[in-house]
Amino acid sequence: MSSTTSLLLRGGTLLLHDDTGHVRPTVADVLVEGALISNIAAGIAPPSKDTRVIDVTGKIIGPGYVDTHHHLWQTQNKGVHGDHTLVRYLPSGNNLSVLYSTKDLFYGQLSGALEAIDGGTTTVVDHAHCNPSTEHPHAAVQALITSGLRCVYCLSPRISPATSNPPTVKMDFYASETVEAFRALAAHGPYGSGRIHIGQTLDNVYASGDAIREFYSEMRGGKDKKHPAAKIITTHAARGPYSGGDEAPSVIQTLHSHGVLGPDVLISHGNFPCPDDGKLYADSGAHVSSTPNTELQMGVFPIALRPDHQPNASLGVDCHSWGAGDMATQMRMMLQAARVERGEKLAAGTAEGHEGRKLWSIDTGFTCEDVYNLGTIGGAKAAGLADEVGRLKIGYKADMVVYETDSPRMLAAAVENPIAAIVLHSCPADISMVVVDGIVRKEDARLVDLVVAPAESAPHQTVNRGAVEPGTRLTWKDVATEVIDSRLKLKEKTRGLDFKAAEDLVVDAFHWDRKSLLEAQT
Image 1 (cartoon, one colour):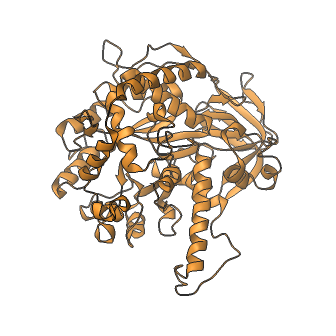
Image 2 (image 1 turned 60 degrees about the horizontal axis):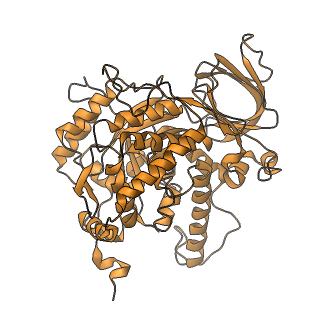
Image 3 (image 1 turned 180 degrees about the vertical axis):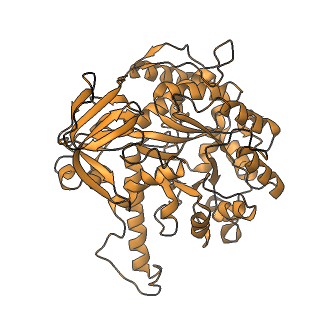
C-alpha cells in the first residue's frame, strides 16, 4: 500500500457537492494530510518536500462511494445464484455460512472488501451473518482492517444449524448472549485507525414490544448509557404477496409502533411500502437501502427514488455473489428501472396525480445526479457518517476515487457530463486510483498489495483471534488463489445436501403464503 503524510492531487475535475446536494464539477487541486482532506483550491503548493504530488489533469475525482447493504463474506458463492430468488438463495447461500471456517471467512470477507474498493467503494455497511462461532467475527474484522476499507460492521447473532440436511439454520436476536457478543466486539472499537465501526443487525421484528424496546435500548448503550452503542442497527425488510399482502404492516411501521425508530435505524430493501412509510422515514430520520441488482432479480421493485423515500434513501450491493459489486452498476440499474416504471405508469394511466389519463413524457423523470447522490451523500447519512464521508470537503475523510477519462467507455462522455459518464458509461476498469483514509488502495488500475493486520478486536488475548497470521504479505493473486481453494472445499461439504427440501422449509419458517405462490397454482 502507499501511505504518506501528505498527498496532493493536481488539476483534476473534482465532483464537489454544494449545500443543496447539487454536484458542481470544478477543476482544482485536493490536498490530503494524514487521513483528511486539508485543502481544495487551485494551485496548492506542496506542504513539504515529502508530499507526494500526482498530476490528475483531465481525470475525474469524486468521493468514494458508500454502500449501505452488503454481505461481504459471500465471495465463494459467486455464480451460484444467477437464476435464484430469495427462497432458493437462502438454503444454497446464506445458510451455508455454518460451513465456513474462520479462514474461509477471512478470505471471503477480504476479497469482498477488495472488490468493493476496486469499484470505487470506500465505505460499506456490512450486514454480517457468517458467525457460526465466537471466533468468526474476529476473523471478519481482521479481514476488514487488512483490506483498508471503511466499514460499519453490523454483527448478527451466532448462527447454527437447525437441521444439517436439508440445510436450515437458526439464530436468536433476543438471547442475552447476542447483547454480550455485541458489547464484547464493540468494547475496543472502532478498529483499523477508526475505520471499522461496530453496528448490529435485527432480522426478527415480530417479538413482543417489550423485547424489541429492550433490544434497542441495549444497542443504544443500555439504560445507564455505560455500554458501547451500535453505530447503526440494520434490519432486512420483506413485504408483499408472500408475506400477508396489503394487509401486513411494513417493518418500519412495526418499529414505529414500538417507539424505537431513529437516525441509527437502517432498513434494507423495504419493498412494497405502505402509504405512510415515507413519512415515517422523514419524521424519524431512519434510512432505507435499496439494492437494485438483487431486488430486480427477485422481481421486487427498488424504492429509493420514490419521492417520499428519496431524502432518506441510499443504495447497496447486497450480495456480490449475485452480480456486480460496484456501486455504479447499482446506480445505473436503479435509474433505468425507475424511468421504466414511470413511463409504464404514465402509459397505463396510473401515475400519481394523473390517474385515468394515459400519457407519455419527453422527460426522463429521474436524473443521473439523483442516483449518484444515493451512492454518495445519501449513503453517508444512512451509515451514520454524514459528517465524515460521501463528499469531497475540507475536513472530511480522504476517501476518493479517480477515473480515467480516455477509455473506450469514458471517452467524450467524461468531458460532456462527468456524472452521466460515471453512472451510465463507467466500469471498475476505468478507476485508476482509490484512496481510503488518506492511503492509496488502488493505483494504476490495480489493487495494491496488502499486509495482514492483527486481530485488533481481541487485543488482550494471548493468542491471535483472527484467521491468518499477521504480517503475511498478500497480492491480489494470493487472495484469489485462497478463495478458489476455499470454494472447492466448501463445495465438497455441500455434496448431497437436499436444497429442494430446504426451500420448502424456508417457506414454512418465514410463514410465507403458499396460496399466492405461482408454482402452487393449478
